[in-house]
Image (cartoon, rainbow, N blue to C red; front, side, top):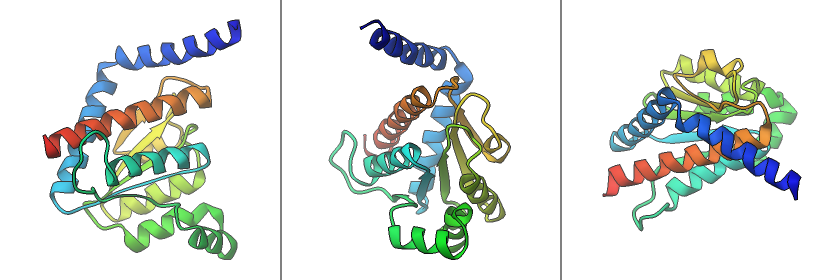
Length: 190
């Protein structure tokens, strides 16, 4: 029982750090405004990650393309890893490091937004995707852990959760993602 309580308390502590960080709160608000502006201007939101972070990316894309609280039209949000034939072909024929950058090169357009999830901030395939996005004038939003890793320098906007423990980081990524979904939905469909 004491271990369970310690895990819950650890999760709460991370969220309290976020709550008290005005810069982080402002960044979350800015990101929601950027996503709204992109959608209003006919652009799309693409998301990517690995493992649990891929699941987080897909989760947020589903909330936006499906619905969050409001019954409304679908929003143009898509997780880049959902085509398993593409992923396995590119990983096999080229390398796993370029699975996202090739999609960025092939389908993202200037004005689109790329949101990448990497708890370390050092996932090479996310880094390469952000590098490709920079070349195409695509806004990048990094979701990372404490330091931001290499994604810090490549992110136009960074949500670097103040934690080093992967589960606590991912729990907070979903929390922030849900906040963004709610704000975007309310701003577009209030």
